[in-house]
Image (cartoon, rainbow, N blue to C red; front, top):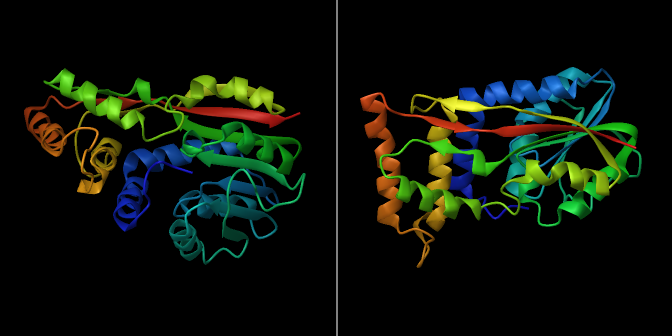
Length: 265
């Protein structure tokens, strides 16, 4: 599903990301947009470690059901463990293009930072449309990565890093093209709005602290690539600058994830 390699180091970074303040706030925003009711049947695609599924289970109650799928066996195992107290949560390995569910099963389908990594977006949206009930809701949150702004005293180095990072997703600016893709598969866009992240401090409770480490890992292939997109020394210097900017009170980062709401027609 993703061009990122989900080994244990990547999973560790992803867990840290999930726990930082910015993503706690973002998770709350997505859950508010879902507006789940008791008894609803819900599908989460790309469930990761299960943080959304666990919270969604509280909303649908024991009468409802949360089906959480991910292409990574390790992520599904983590989600199963995290949601063990909620029997209404079912986690399984599945491909978004071939969802293992009957037609017209779910009231809601959602995914956060998932669809930009899907190789076949049209096929995945079509299968989501298939498993949705008529009038069912879709909530998708993905980032326009070209909206990312990071202050640096070396803008050329920053440009090289961000260009290399673009390759981590099949659709690095997915929200811009998503409404047309939704319409093409029988899903009607209702609206889009930004869920901006702004960091003016560089610390372990911020999104930018952890995404920078994810970016380093991807760009240098975990330090194992013979010919990384940007050489290791350049990436190390890029990362080290953030500590300097923080001590000088000059640190700034922003990104613009977009929340897209659609319904089946």
